Image (cartoon, rainbow, N blue to C red; front, top):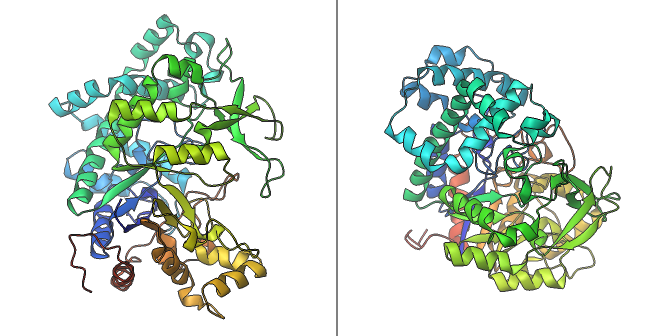
Length: 500
């Protein structure tokens, strides 16, 4: 990996006319801005369809795309919708915030109108056939789920819950129209994303995608393939995922995701993982794997527990999984999310993999010193962030952290004060100047926004995943300043003029 930089901005945070960021002209303009600013990467969050809580890390499918990201204006150009029809829906009236309830109540109705006018063609048939290995189960799952007012598959009657063939065939016949509607959504998503991705690459911008280690319990993956997970004979989880208690949470984090049956995965030659990773690299150029530690050891919490206190660390597949992936798919551009407490075995696995790990500047300023997150300690084979989607914005963090941490940060940066109008850029300068080969800056920090622009507060529900960049916020002045800093710390792409 060369010495480069990029910007972190979720697709849903893009400006757009229809209440949520999507694959619209604003996405293309954002890519143009990245190119102008001398950036090499656009990092996004998982693209999957979201449910309760709106988290992209709890998707109904590890393969499917979020139908909210389908651009209505493109459907208008294709003759599937009219401007008048799109204007008839209420997508929310805030330019800087997503109203998911209004999006949910309007987007699918609008897409249904487009679907009613859609005519199958050769490209559609090819997509359906090529993706049948996941698309058939996903579309059937969502159609059944809708017919049952959204309840999770573990609450369905036994024949459907346990995928008895007669029950499945009846559902396919009764819900044929709804199944076809979900396939249409995925076709439009794939077509629009493929075009946007190709445009980014043509402008010299690579896409960094994000893959959660776990899948959601309420999803097509678990329903379609329960043998992949630690379930009992009634297809109920034996244990679920989370994190143990630490300084930030006295009861730990109870994520609730089903845990993998690693013995079964090993017997199949990790076939499901091969398919999953191959699909990811159709969507993205680089993949960040979330919770990398879980492949070495994972935290197992008995199903039904109310907290994560009584969990147990269990062995994961280790490097065997990644050796198998490399044998089948070749050397891949993977970033390992290795944040938090790391054991010697995790550190060894990271070293053996050769994957760059992550560094976060907000974690650096322990008043006692010696933090591995201090910029002078970064190895070249790493990716540095001022903060991630799970952190406060840098400006928000600085004002909410303790005085000792702020004082240490100022001493480290050799300044007696930080200018409020420039605060985040002082920390961006630190990360840009570090040894890390890749520097990724969240868009909110480039705009020096306060905590109201935070993307997510872990272990909370409500008001997450909702921030949106307003139209023209990523302006010419910000672009110029970012390019200057990128040039100053020698992160411009090789093919760009190195003088500035």
